[in-house]
View 1 (cartoon, rainbow, N blue to C red):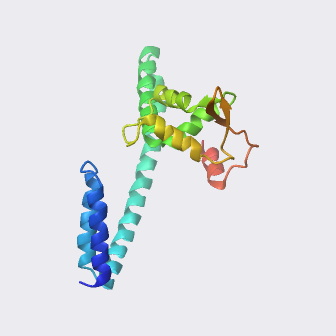
View 2: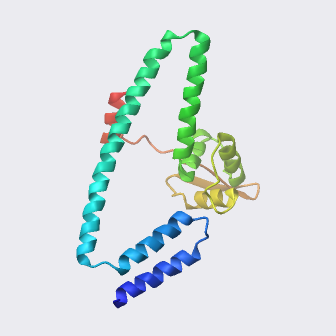
View 3: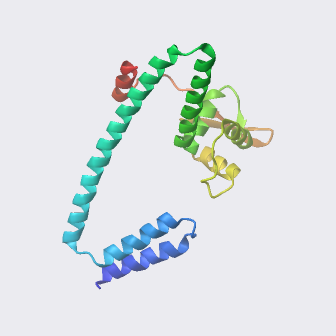
Length: 197
């Protein structure tokens, strides 16, 4: 085995051993990659990259098909819901809203969730504790974070750019609020989506 592949195997082994067993996906990925790398030559890399690009194109096509199907189902839902009584309509709309809310909660990262809170409370100075409480009230899921939620919120707030949030000291504690910016022109993609709505 040549020296570069041996170094890669050692590196992969070090990474794998430094992670807890609960990160089994990552551990499995590192082990699989180290095994593959130890047996590959330049031709194998090209073949794997060709296969990866092919899978990427296929996955994007499936994603586009699913997005199209979601739009059609949403349109059908709202076209059909008017056939129901007010009581039944309200029940189905509540289920639909809850489904969308759950989807949005799981899709939003911590920084995006914090930005939403700072924007919604833009006139108030919020401490790290305040932001964490608002995140908990909104149903934000901290289960994927290894540190405690307050530390994660604190780190995220501290890393926000000066053009995103401003900070001051309130009662001896750092507090943050959304920095108001002049309206920015919408990007071409945002304008296209807005026109479709």
